[in-house]
Amino acid sequence: MANTNVYTGADGSISLSSPEGLEGEQAQAVIDANDLVSVGRVQGVSVEVTSDLKPFHEIGSRYATELRPGNVSVTGTISRAFVNGALLKMLLGEAAETRPSANWNQPAFNMSLLMENVARPGVRNTVTLHGVKINNWNYGIPEDDFVMESANFQALSITVGDEQ
Image (cartoon, rainbow, N blue to C red; front, side, top):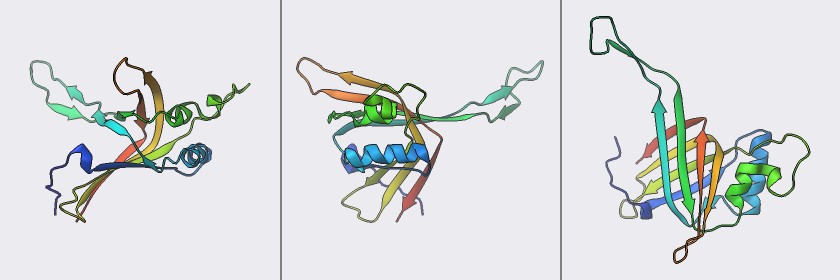
């Protein structure tokens, strides 16, 4: 049965985990050092999945006769009001603390977005992004509002699950 619940941001939570491999080990070190298993103080999260569709147009036809699926990209942003350098360390890895003399690995992690309405326990929606890497970090210091950090990310793949 499909999930038909309505959610707000108050119903959501975000958790991080690390995949296997060197990039996952580096992400796990940042997760452990900054207590990032459950990501807090998040104000906004967006996830966008795009497919590079290619329309085929025949000569003499104004409408496409076929749509061919192309590359799929998973991107998004996250804004956070708890600035402790963890997201920047996820972007730079070991280069966030020292300047390595050679090339270095960038941490990769999995991000799970969980929606569960407390009025309907046991019914939840989970979106999991796999192989996430941060590609842009921004730090905003407004005059009379909350200090926020934001990051743009890309993921290798995405899975979704509804539980009842």
